[in-house]
Length: 252
Image (cartoon, rainbow, N blue to C red):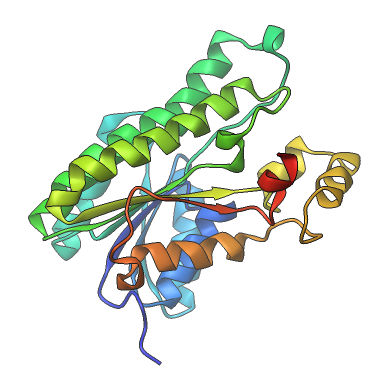
């Protein structure tokens, strides 16, 4: 069977764990050269090393994705090593939940920086590289929360709704350069971050209101990312794929 991403060079933010790690692993299994970008250099290197041990190709990059320079450095590294960048996944996020009156300046700055500014800078720097190579695919990890109003989630809902807007606007602007931009909007996915922020009672409640009767797995999102990265989605841009087990529609 032909590998769907053979020869492609992909950069994944927040790639050392959770959804980002699953996407990195799946991209590598499909033949891509994967750059694992994480704020913790040792975590990024461990993830890249694990991919190499499985026979894949991977490099580690480190930096704060809220800063433009992080993307400049990572893309320059990939261009130097491989001469191109074909796929960017803007996945990185930092989340804290709480009521409106508990929001602090530090919380706001970090969530907006990691979850929103990073998409702006990543899109800007990656698009410049992709345009030189004849095009590419940018995949933004949004959330079902971007479509909903959820208690104790003001910043998170706002950031993810903003990611959906960035996706649509950049798709229109970058389409003539043969760069497609799409988003994946997951529901609750079983990751380390979810386990930290949601207790057992909360998990049970989420499962109960999800039509398919389970929470998502990281591979559910990785599968969609492979589709959006490759030629099978070649006429698709500006779209947001809800992968939430039907929970968003169940809320309506």
